[in-house]
Image (cartoon, rainbow, N blue to C red):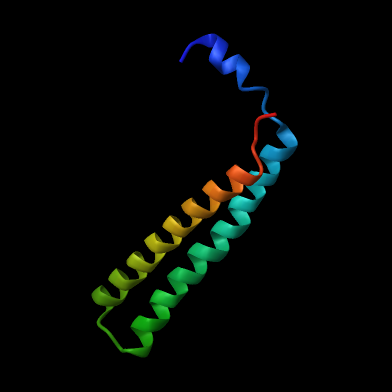
Length: 83
């Protein structure tokens, strides 16, 4: 990628960037926290051993991060950071 390609893409709009960062923090804590809590609740309701329960929590938390990744891709498509 040459210098002219970088310049042609436009400047970063700081207002849009701050909006995207705020959305990432808000949605990220909600999605990852809720998925992690769901894993904890399932392990507790089924009275699973701690190692299995922690494994379920990790799988659910990773699922939350994947969901956040796809959400942010869509958010950046609809609210581009560059002008």
